[in-house]
Image 1: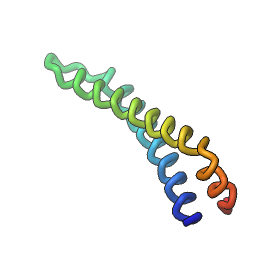
Image 2: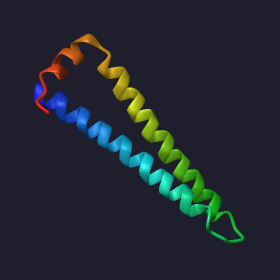
Image 3: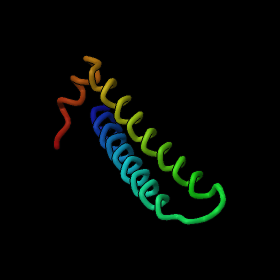
Image 4: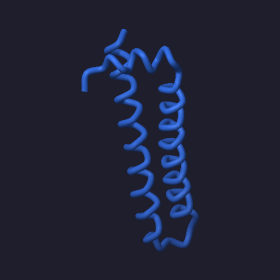
Length: 79
């Protein structure tokens, strides 16, 4: 049970950081697209959604860690 909590928290943080980095790269690259259609805007929106999703996952992880039962289980994790 403890290993599962540790693994889930590590995966949540990794997923969050990956989404934020990927979204930032996509938004940055969409600024250099010079097409005369809506594709650059669509790519930019997808990047912003990815960044927002990463922040949301991190926020949920932070709130979950604040629960006493979860916090006690995570204190027993080996880093």
